[in-house]
Image (tube, rainbow, N blue to C red):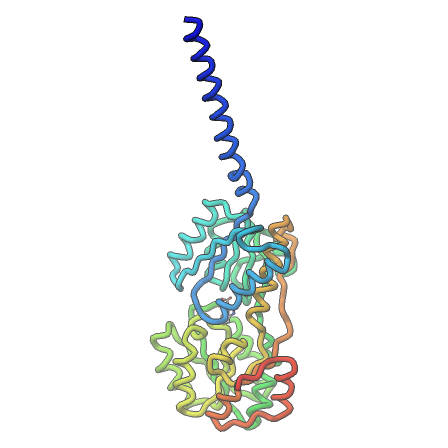
Length: 334
Ligand code: TRP
């Protein structure tokens, strides 16, 4: 009997030790995992500008010492331009306790804002954070949201159009009716164009389905076209320029990526760089910096980007001084 008790005691002790050892082993990696913060990135849809911003965010995090997979976990979601995707993805980030979330493009940021009033939200290139009701003020956001605005240097852009098209009178502005970002900029152009000697004609589309038709009509009524940061058009630049090139009308976009996709020229914000700035603000939020008191970051100086391939196709001469300047400080597409 004594022997039996000794055996049971020994057995229990063994089980106890085994349990302690295994649970100890289990606990270790779990604790380590919890220390790596998660950043949820929600991108509205794919187009070259937003893809560059996404890339830039990862670079910005790296610049601040957060290597993906080691110091930070990234949960990246692309909503493919679907509102219900944006809602469920935002809610999942919050349920899964992401430490910081990022919205690329206005609808994505708005979906995140609807999902949480607590988790810090960093805006990835949102044109008008206040107008989109994401912050109370650009200098003192007040809530859980701050980030980067991509409000374009519209005056510099109109000045460039005037310089390259000295005889142009009518400027067509084309934008998607439901795109807040594009509408904000289209309105700014409407207000400023007269100062540069242009009369504006506005054209609206509701989706890529009517882009070809509206762009064709526009091309026969205007001397040049301005396109704001319009998510729908940015995803279908080929359709727009096919219609305008056919009538030899140049397109002036607001950003570098859209010049690469067939626009003639811009003084535009570098999209990758906007992403880098966003990534740095994400890093600051991970370190505990409060969005409420962190002002919105505005990127003010654009790069001169000219597309000589397009100029040739349209029979437009870009002055040497402009090309030299673009070569030095911006980009020339040949
Ligand atoms: N500013 C846009 C928004 O708030 C997003 C955006 C950033 C964008 N860069 C762009 C759209 C370039 C079109 C082209 O929704």
